[in-house]
Length: 170
Image 1 (tube, rainbow, N blue to C red):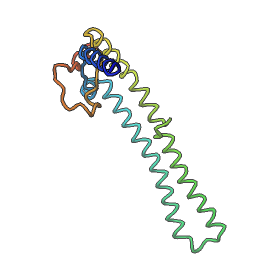
Image 2: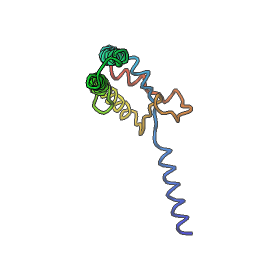
Image 3: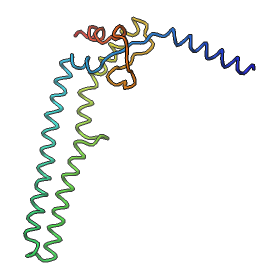
Image 4: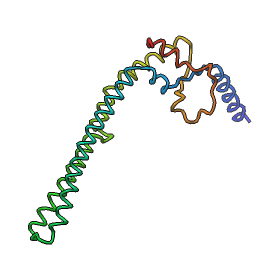
C-alpha cells in the first residue's frame, strides 16, 4: 500500500509539474522560406549537384558505350583482347561509381560537406533566435511543427515562427 501511495504521489507531482511548463511551436519550413540566404544556398547546392551528376553520368555513358562496342566486336577479339576490354569496362564503371560516392555519399560526400558548410550558419542563427525568444517568454520546450509528424493539432497562438523571424531581422 505504501508503494502504491508513493507511486501515486510521484505521478501527481509530475503531472502538476508538466502542467506548469510552457510549450511553443515553430515551423522551420516557413522560417527557412523567409530567409533569402537559405534560398541562395539551396540554389548553389542544386547547381553543384547538377554539375556533379552530369560528370557521373558522362562516365557512366562512356562505360555503356565501351560495353556496346565490346558486344559488337566480341566475335572478332581474342581471349586476351576480350579480357582487356572487359577490364576497361569494369574500370570505367568503377570510376563512375567511385565518383558518385565521392560526391554524394551521405557519410563524407562533397555534396553533404558543402550543404553543411552553407546551412550550418543559417541553422545556428535560427537556433539562437529560438533560444532567445524561448528564454524571454519562458518556454520550456519548442517543437518544430514541420518535422513533428505526431502533432495532429496545435493552436496558432503558440506558434512563435514570426517572432523568431523578427528576432533574426526578417
